[in-house]
Length: 177
Image (cartoon, one colour):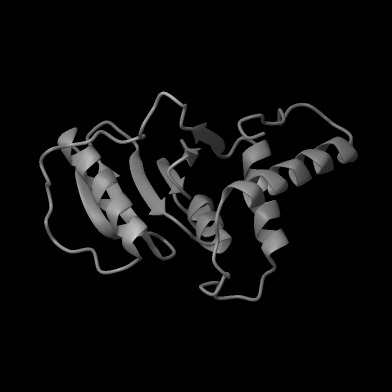
């Protein structure tokens, strides 16, 4: 569903726009694993947050794409023989920690700078990934919250937000302005 935006110059009937918003809300809910939005500083409903993100998607403020792992692809990440950082990861369970380390090594082997638990406008990303002339990349491994996603997409500029719910697919948000 994602990546199809409604042209801002086109006057569409409200029911077409509303159906697109609902479709994108369902897509988000189906594809992103969240914990209870306990980090939300205000009392806001999950549907309200989904709606805000969906509106950003269909208006073209952000691009959202689901990247599926093909049957021939064993992993999204390069397997590196060198372990670039031996420092222990202190949060998350085994899969979360292992996945963070694999992704970290993938980007380090390609010459990127990687920062663990990078501060965002709201909360922290598991990894912040940086390279000159590339958009900043913030990675969430496993569960996150829709409030955190919405707030950071709303307030930050020119970055990629990668959500990794599992080993089978990724959700990529790109905010290019």
